[in-house]
Image (tube, rainbow, N blue to C red; front, side, top):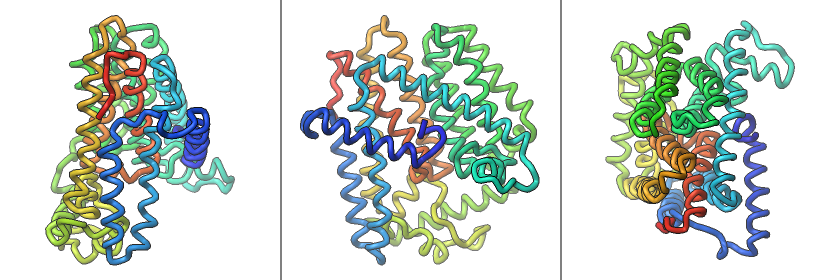
Length: 383
């Protein structure tokens, strides 16, 4: 529930679950720790970069975001088996389908001035672009992309779940369109294409999903125009993103080893913003790999990439090791692979690794293939 509506609730739940896991297993040594090598390397280098920044205390305070990575281990160790993993993914999808429906209503009911009521006022604040219960539309787009792609292979399998998932999936795609976040659209399109190519045969579901995506583009006002402006040098957003890339590369060139330090972008960017920049201040560069390289140096980027290299290597091995008879488990693992790949693609257009709500969902979904592997002893989950 927290992952879909409240970051505070999600974080409290994760802390509570972490305590339960540690107590019930009587110590961390009895838990499962895949990917721990690259995760610890990334965390350690982040702390080193923080210590050597020009404001070490500020950078160290920013490093608390590393705790979000622990979500991966909490979800992995709290879910007992493949059935629990499938239930987790299906429940998250059902919740996000409801949130998507409310996001669509949000856009159509958006008033010129939000009411003063606490909950409704926030829900109807700046709602010409769907943001649901999140603070901004980019967060909703990031979460929807991950959740929709995770269940796409299960829908394409035309199993029992396809019947009830298809309407919710279409609602999710529509809400994603109403966010008007082009980077998320590109990542989602790549993920849908991969799902259509790699998922088990399901002709009817393939047709429904493909038609739904195309229909949404034509039905949602302004969606096609937004899509046509992707990469256009006449678009102010594109110009500003190019300026950030230029400034970010200059930072990496000046600080290749340790970077400028975590959380130092806001103070540093004005000195590097090129003349084409539409804004002279920003807290991030709208590009995850470049942001990490600028803040933590090239070695920090290498350790971050190592996390995902290890994840894909192990998860692909898990997928290949699952027998054809475990169709739902294979679909879930494939969906998680595609969703995480889309997370990285979207990160080329947005610093989604720094968006806590999106990262919480990404880390949760990354854990599911390793939970599935627990039910298949032949598949190793060691790094």
